[in-house]
Length: 63
Image (cartoon, rainbow, N blue to C red; front, top):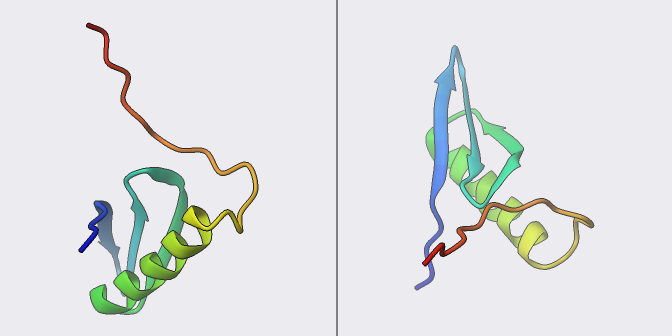
């Protein structure tokens, strides 16, 4: 099973978050489980090429 990391926080009644690899694309949910469902949909769209010019985060090996 593939896993991706995400960052999340609660702001009053909303749960907000983004995929670690795609920090420009924030989504929200009414509960943490709802937020996770939205993040899964977002991941499908971003990794499937449905959102053009998506900016990503990566690591560069300096050695």
